[in-house]
Length: 239
Image: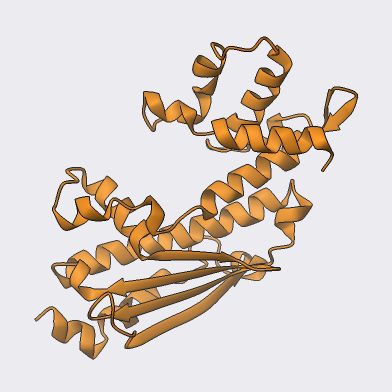
């Protein structure tokens, strides 16, 4: 990256979620409503940053709508590459730092969808290795009141794994940096207590071949969820 590209990478990263002030729905399109009033007069910086930030969300192929190179200050700005990095980094930005743990513990989160997202953050750890993304989940059974509640959460968890893999492949089409990550390596640990060592650990990897073999569910979630809920320790825990 040249210095100007590093600037736009940093600036677009800072403002990409600013539209959330208006609500989650369509937030990637709302950055303009705020940035236009920022107290500096460089419209080129605002315009290019908004274009890049807007591509971090939305359906279809939003990165394709960007110019591959936009000139700024006598240097090219690889907007598609920058947008791809921000989009995939956003997908990988999970972990307990995003979880309202106190709210989960005290039942202060009223929205069930939001509660599931916070629980997902609580059990997730991400490590970006040289050529792969490492996903580790440490799930304590006492986080869930019933086997049904655990099962529903696992369905959500596997949907997130599949989504990350799709984003890896999608963003890799526009970024040589993202393309170097050839797989997502998953480890799902189960314990009876959050501070206890895992009694069960399921591991698998998703790569480009897994998408070709099973486009609807490359993580093979039904198979793994069935194996998990039939585990003797888990079934006994919820009896």
